[in-house]
Amino acid sequence: MENNKLVETIVKALDEKKGMEIKVLDIHAQTGIADYFIIASGTSSPHTKALSDFVEEKVQKDLGENILRREGYQGGSWILLDYGTVIVQIFKPEERSYYNLEKLWGDSPEVDTTDMIEE
Image (cartoon, rainbow, N blue to C red; front, side, top):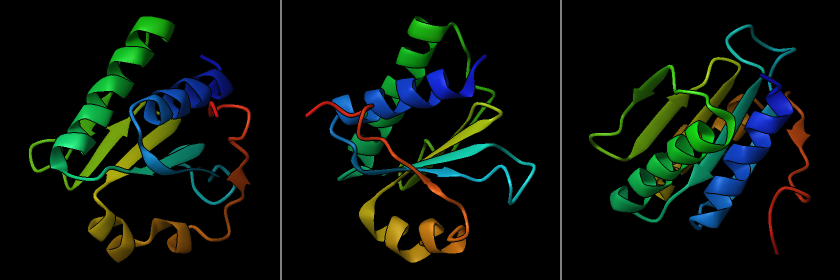
């Protein structure tokens, strides 16, 4: 499957369910674990779970792709969705600030999501 379509579908799903501070990092040059990290925040554990559920539902429905692995769903503070070449990380604000993945992967270019997110 084309990464761009997967990234766009995920970003739109996160935006539709009011995910906050959605960022896409192109990490393919820094690591072999994935091509993209998509990072977003939810306001609470129920919100992060709702974001996770909606992403999985939209990707399955629109692209026919199943998630490879999900971590952290039970607690809801930091949920990781692994789609192979794209890894989605949904945080509560406190955890996102603490782990600060944007700084950790600071050498990775950020993908412009302007055209993916509805105004």
